[in-house]
View 1 (cartoon, rainbow, N blue to C red):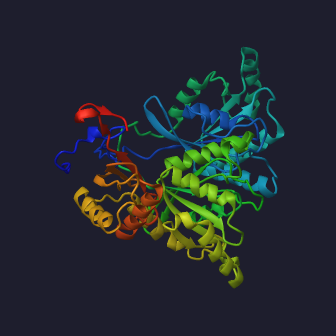
View 2 (cartoon, rainbow, N blue to C red):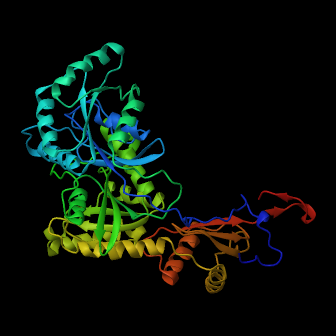
View 3 (spheres, one colour):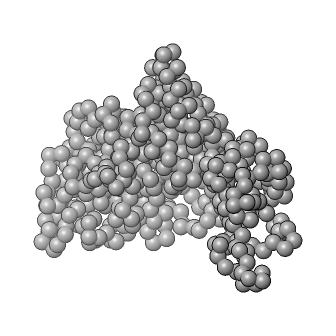
Length: 478
């Protein structure tokens, strides 16, 4: 670590300071094998998402007491008795479904085909329905091992009702209450027994694919872009806004590298103003952004940049994630719209001139190949570190050429500066006094001109020196 100038003590600054690093820790743990997949399927509103939450041990899948809340196939990491597997939540399956319901059912069928074991959920309080019997025929065609779950067996009397489900011909029913956890441990034991060899839970391990969150307001084309990148239907697409509710994770190969993309729910309102499904979807989207390393914010280039768009961008910046702004539906933009869009960008995106922008069309595939280079540039900036010596030499030259304005008869000075962390880059200036916000913006602008930082927020904080008490002894907060 570079030494401080003579006579300078970090304890002389307000709030103290702690050096840290956000670099990932290296690990020599080896991956012990492929992670098997469990698909949870059933007709609408039998408690599939509640069961998924019980299996993974946290409230992750969106749950609401009405059918059709889950619409895509959504994978989650799970573990039981020291073993790892993936559990996939699906939308309600119905025979002869049409329109959006047909797309949801198709996603459930894909989940069955790609799973190692299928957990078929039936509502024991209702019993086997015609839809359940039709689903059994679909499951038999898949030739996959099926575990029959009699959900909502909240008491002993309802457990006895599970006997009637032998009629489905799937073997012994497993009576459980996904809501209360009744019987869930025995079910997980049976799931592990039915799975192929599962890898052990290990701490650390090599870093996996870079995590990219697709965010934006409803109906800007996030799911369409994910399907275009994945070259298959990974997410349900509908012209009706708000089709995606749960974040949908997908491993996508792009430009010779595997990326983990997360398609998120469109953000209509602030979290505290939303309710029901939209409230939980907003929480999941915020969590997906926090868990990502870079966010691709999709804007509809054919529409005016809205307050919602700006709020989504603000959420990404406040979370400290790298940022790429993708103007989607570019194939529909004419010369007049491009003229006005340039004006809107200058006016409404002035505070994020550092964000990388790409113009794409998820529908036609136009310029989608530009996304990977843009994401890589943003991540490289996000993880950039400037040596302390070089940073202080550059700041000395900058502040000598353009000093801070005089305040109270003197101008505050920078005594020492350091980069406190990366991902995103964070800088701390130890100064003789408070700095104006305008001068900090000037430093950030010049810092970007000198070192780039394209596609990443930059945080600059000031630690003013404490004032000395009478006679220079004893320190009092200034």
